[in-house]
Amino acid sequence: MLDLLIHNAALPDGRQNMSVAVQAGRIVEVSEGLMAPAAEVVDAGGLLLSTPFVDAHFHMDATLSLGLPRLNQSGTLLEGIALWGELKPHLTFDALVDRALAYCDWAVANGLLAIRSHVDTSDPSMLAVEALLAVKKKVAPYIDLQLVAFPQDGVLRSKGGVDNLKKALSLGVDVVGGIPHFERTMADGAASVKLLCELAAEQGKLVDMHCDESDDPLSRHVETLAYEANRLGLHGRVTGSHLTSMHSMDNYYVSKLLPLMAEAQLSVVSNPLINITLQGRHDTYPKRRGMTRVPEIMAAGMTVAFGQDCCMDPWYSMGSGDMLEVASMGLHVAQMTSQSAMQQCFDAVTKNPARILHLQGYGLEAGCNANLVLLQAQNPVEALRLKATRLKVWRRGVLVAQTPPRTAALSLAGRPPQTSFLHTK
Ligand code: FE2
Image (cartoon, rainbow, N blue to C red; front, side, top):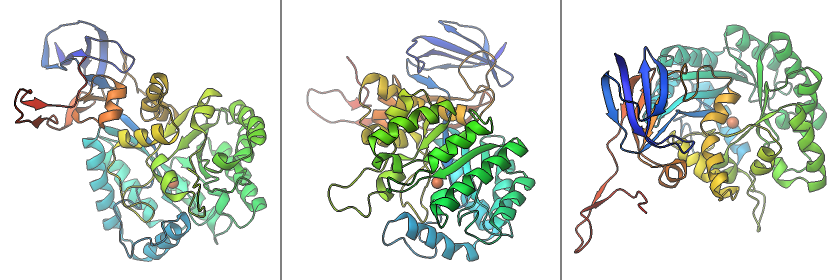
């Protein structure tokens, strides 16, 4: 007998009336109309059953710290970094863990079951690193948390930056991070990229750098990142996060850059909520959107994810761990409004970030982990439109969160007694 059978589900690829059979935490069969004895049988009612959401870019050491010790007045990236610097001396292990765990509760409720979080390695005490390593262990039963050693103050710019980052890696942090545009000069930025990619190659680590998070069209560290990935044979192992300067770059230069990035099989994480609010702050009108060239990077064959980046922290007062909100913002800002482009936006918060994290066992086929989300929507486009309610969330076949359907009762003469906002043809 099966542990769980979910039937009458729509899948993200458009298949209808599908059944997913689960045994011992894994999917054992996905087929149309399958009915079999199971300890628990769930009728999906024709609604969308998806693999979980994945966030490829987050800062769990800063999350839910909004207002500590004060609010960001200018709304800029640089004031956010300064504000984080003011908060750091007051951080405690327990407070960091408590806030991260509270955020993870929201994540699970939203069907977000894998997160790549950067963790600031600038503090030689490794307080934030130790706290997030403890969180990683604690949430492992329900969230795959991957940590990136992130030298927020610049690996070359800050005293002891390289040693601190290496220390974080030796403690068990998974991925090598960087922030070349925050180093003091373009040359230092390029040197930091080279150094960090060499370190990753030596240690067999993945790379994910904050790269060119700027409106400056001449911030071209992504070129060095792709070059180093090629040189060191790190194909498919290097991610450029943000890449906002690409929004402002000269088109001719980009026509040369994209093939270099594609050759390196660079992955890209765009963070639409944050890019649309932090970038363009020096502009009057027109104000640049400051999001990287997502459709063009996808068309060049690279894997692109939308990340959340921030939730109630020195950089961003909003957010709730809702990756459909993130993807919806990306869709709007990039004008990805065709049916296929909207589907790509859904992929950008599900299977694309899973690929970027090198997540094992992610997928909707036999043999994959039974990590599943039932959404109150009929297809991915409707899920994006409604920021659909996560009716049920399963981890390894076990129900870990559920939310009642969103339904409004109506009292209108001659109209139905309720609506759930679903589109019925
Ligand atoms: Fe970030």
